[in-house]
Length: 441
Ligand code: TRP
Image 1 (cartoon, rainbow, N blue to C red):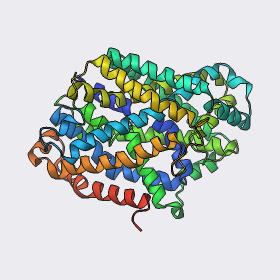
Image 2 (spheres, helix red, strand yellow; image 1 turned 90 degrees about the horizontal axis):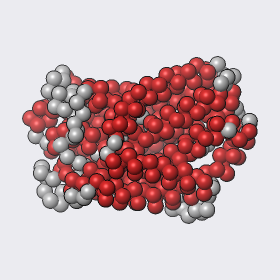
Image 3 (cartoon, rainbow, N blue to C red; image 1 turned 135 degrees about the vertical axis):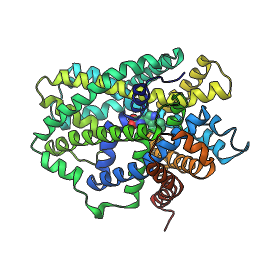
Image 4 (spheres, rainbow, N blue to C red; image 1 turned 120 degrees about the vertical axis):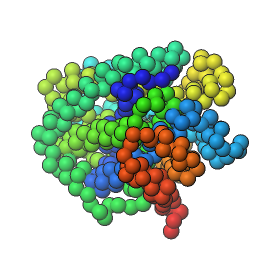
């Protein structure tokens, strides 16, 4: 398989990057971590860490034309750190799929519940209670499993291409309706308060945990650190300009996240909700916005369907990391590889879903199963992957091989990229990582 058009390359990678991470995870992470300060650091990290690492993954993927484990096979020794990390990355991908499927399941439920006008709930408080009851229920587990089943059917048949095509049509539509919602939010009573929260950094809010959260979000949102972009790049054609594509992907991805923030925070303050609500934030606030809009039901259904599609292109890319490994390295048939992946994810996902209900008491370091999958993948495994990929391209790969992948890119940019990969990215990631975990005092 190889992406043939420039648009195909960008669209598939943007499809992977843009998803629940932008619209659900970004607002609640920003809300929990001080708003403006978080956004500022987030943008900085996208520039000095995200952009170099995504390009590094592209370089490794296209030069090796292999999966995250196989990519290091020919160039490094048998028991190298890089190869062992490949296996770790598979675990990270499975963890993300575990909790991501739960949130995608909530989205599916909201498509239906939009049609019933959110069961008659009209105030943010009522929506809050309804949503709390829903996510604790077995119904939520059912939605999660349904979403996983759809993924299974798509992956088994290898019809990702069809889905990608469909999402190429619908993603721009998602973008347009986000703009419409922005305009609506900006006219709400709490607009100025919301914008101030999102855009005015309070530097006293910047703590190591805020930095770790922002870095984890940058990795999560750009789909980097687990070899997802690496796997996709192994399908790129030799003419694709890697740094340019990385820039476009990072730019669009950040734009969508900021738009989501502009939609959510004015509403949060207008409806008297708290920005630090956690994973439920967006799901409690969005319906309030829709109920407030003319033709609200229509907007609501359209939005949640598009969000579901955006999630699907993201989970396809995550599934692809694991399935590419199983089919290439373990020489498994596609169906078997897909079935095994789906089985593992289903078990994890049920645990994640129930951690809002019957399993809410099962915690480690105060984190439920859902929180653990979320935290460990974004704040532990992905940053580690980021360090390794940067060092691999910056120090380990032959300069000639790197340059060959960057042909056509201006020399200044190449020099800046290499500098970031050698020093800036690995050192920043390591410092933020260690201090965020409280290991640097
Ligand atoms: N970036 C996606 C989002 O924002 C999630 C995602 C897809 C991802 N593929 C990934 C995250 C690979 C990490 C690694 O919704």
